[in-house]
Image (cartoon, rainbow, N blue to C red; front, side, top):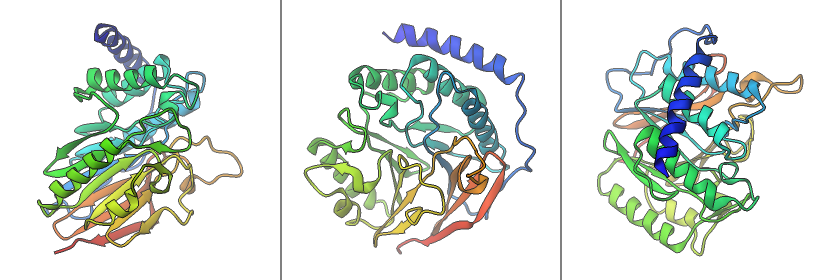
Length: 305
């Protein structure tokens, strides 16, 4: 099966490279972290690109976003996409989504979370689309995946990716196996005394599990849970929520097509730049489409001793 995906990769990289010859990034100046000398980890989080075969405007928005993510004078350790990367989980959508990530190469590591639209959005093709998700990530980024949930370490920090195990639109269906796997990883990470980053397409309050994932997350210090799915703009109350021991961060849809009723700084192009230092984490929302910081949506969290 992977031989076909390697062929798709060749087609993808060729088409993407040709298309980018006629593309111009935004005119923003290079952006920087707050403290380049003392930063330990620097990464970007985006959500809900919804790349769609017949929607060229989204390709344009996503391309500008990726170029701005790359337009930094500091090392960007990772780009995390929080799912609904494609609209229907189709090959044509995946060819361009993964092709843009690979050719533009906006960060050292690329982590793609799986969303409900990536698995057909409740149309009964979950199993086939899950296979596509695994194959595309393995072929394009050597991810070595065998399921929808996994973890990796970057600069010694745990990046934990969760994923729904059933064909559900509104909920992340989490098995007991995935729950106890998460619990063991959080315990393991806690022993290292560093913050832990958990990524899921669905919000913490839309996880269907025998056990309480919220209680589990709150049992450990310095856990940061990033989610999308809602398409809520920055001015929603759920953008930053302090739950006690863990913080949740909601990312808007990054490729909203703008209308007269929407505003740039609250809708299209929004993502989070996360800067990790020894004693604090700074999360800065940025409009990566226009290349401007959303100054009022910046938070600093002190880390436990």
